[in-house]
Length: 167
Image (cartoon, rainbow, N blue to C red):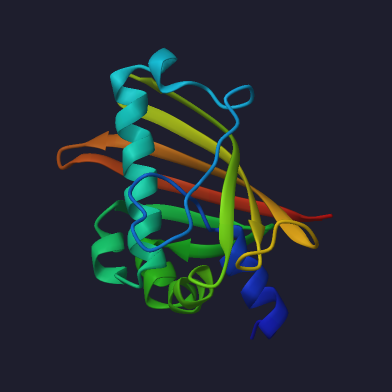
């Protein structure tokens, strides 16, 4: 059984921001460090949209809807621990993660996306802080999502979250 601290860290680690968040704090992305959408292919922009929509649903606690953005065999990994495939994650750790995700503000520090025939990746670096805090302790999280073209459209096939304490 995970401790409260590790559960909170995991939840903070999976927090992402994007334009689809209505209830979350707005993301800021310094232009100098974030790949501009204008240089991304349409497929890469589509993959970013899938990642942001999945995270918005997870944050909102809409787990059944979030499940639909993952392939059944998607593997979820966080900080060196395999959390399982789609159903094991959504039916287990995602519940606590969803609750904790609503308790942080987040800023995208860097995002890069690429897509080829049938496969894309989205790598996002973000800073997570207590609500309203502009200084003080924070977490820097790196999120990598592999997105695969399926008969049902683009779906997330792999998620990897890792984080570190920042000052």
